[in-house]
Length: 329
Length: 272
Image (tube, rainbow over all chains, first blue to last red; front, top):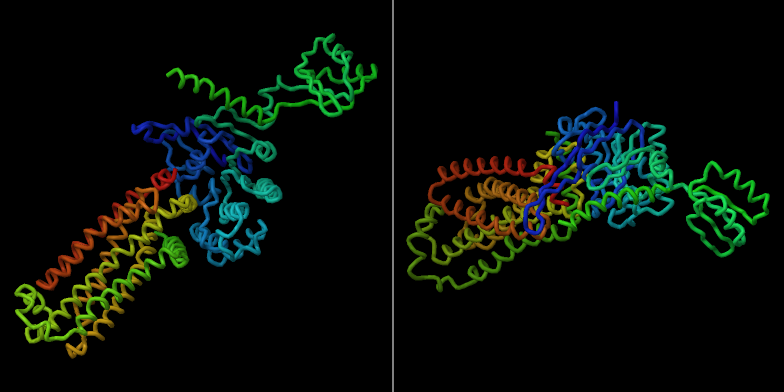
């Protein structure tokens, strides 16, 4: 059974634009199949439909067309069971600022029907986990932004849900706190078979954490796969970089004579790099030749297109025709 | 209905109220003004005035007719005492405005406040049902209102009895009318006010908008409680039964409306 399954998930809003009623399709025919214990990241620019997707999958919103299941439970028909089985970190921590950390967590625990005797130990366990023990009886409004985010993550996990939706989990965290959160996500996914659905702008995080990444724009899933599979979409953009301590025309001639496509020559403070287009297979031969000819080379590396570059390419290429259409209309 | 979840939400709201200077000042300040300071400012000067200054033609046939139904020895009382009794009842209507006015503050705070601070989403993501949310919000808005009404009515009754006992020789309050209005009609008007405020709160985006619309909505209710009390003088039993029946129907209909209007979809999209 899949942890998250969506088929043709669509959400329309009626909005007012320039004083007139307009139709906004926030999520457009989305298909998802996320396995148990998988960490899935949904990437997309602001307004792409990430938060609406999360709200649909957590049974807060109802789809206009299509549907979804969480652990086999329908998000409309079995909404209450879905809500009991998911945890949600909202886009902003949105804690009750006048209440203490303990009161915030205990309140949510009661909403999830956690037995009275289990609430205190569970709150203390989570507070320990996120290093907030000394802040437990302070009003949450007195905490730093990062600490509030940690309380909000603890709140999402208070009922020990099998599927956890996190909207920008490390957005306001200091590097060490972000690391703790990432480690906890990995640990819960591997050891306790928790499924994570993460909405993020943080491509580095998505690449490191996720087994699969989906890229959403204008409500549509425009690409999906493991970070490696997505990189393969731009495999032809792999570059080989040779770095030399000094530069002369002989080196340049060496590459030109062999008809390699020189993409860029980049002088740095004490070195110069030459970027050659996709010669991964021939690289050992070239290194041999460069060494034989005593060229002052001290580094060779392959540069694969980053997830960031792929993401930007995909989103920009999606935006381009739409913007052009808007301009022409 | 899951009462544990309802109580969790109610308790949370009440904890927030006790820590909100704005709500606390409304729940303590308005009763203090309405139940203590206003009666002191109006009735005490007349109590202290010279009774001879009040002798004359009488209060008029209508008022005599009205009060002779409730006060047994009305005709034998001096004009001065009659004036004091009339003012005591008139000011009592002001005290009964509290169960209508206070929910305008608490209900606005509890639903629109949650939307404004975006705390509602975590509640909406939990298994609590829409009906449970509305029910919890009604209870949490009512408790401060009941508390303020009962305390201020008790304070008002004690104050009036202290001021009027020397003239009447007996305690004017609590009488049947004050008991019925404080314990039955007041709470019912309070429930209607909360339900109306919850309906408004689901439609607006800011606490300020909610207060502004809410202050207009409570005006007809205030007139209604005045009319209810006024008519009570003329036909006690019939008014009581019809009034209670009508209010119960209104409470039920408004609860249905409030639970229909309040749904996750609207609650969350109004936050966008």
